[in-house]
Image 1 (cartoon, one colour):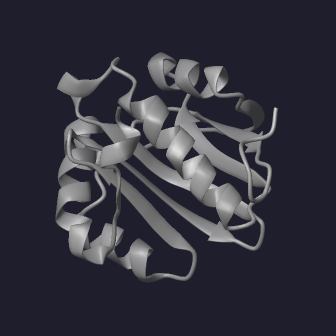
Image 2: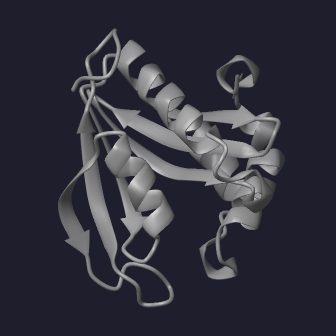
Length: 152
């Protein structure tokens, strides 16, 4: 249901992406329109936008990708939109020849950690006091099968 409405976002969508990000994250962690637009103009930058209120922003370098932000409007959470965005980002990475996806998630964000664990992400590191509030981040990774579905 959610995949059919996904938009391959460009810098012209930066305001919409920033609005979703601002609604989903604490004020100290907001990415502004300019920062998002810049990411999308850099080599390897990509974003997917769902009009129902979800976005994923990432970048690729060689055969590795990083999810920089995955956000869903609070009133749209727990309906599968985050899972659909993550799966679509993984497919994008695989189609581009990616072999692994990395991301950081706040240690205190149990809902996001559960989403990533269910999708097969595993902890590969930890960043102490990574967030503005002093919270730690887990570095997670998941292998991807280039050109095809995600690896197990």
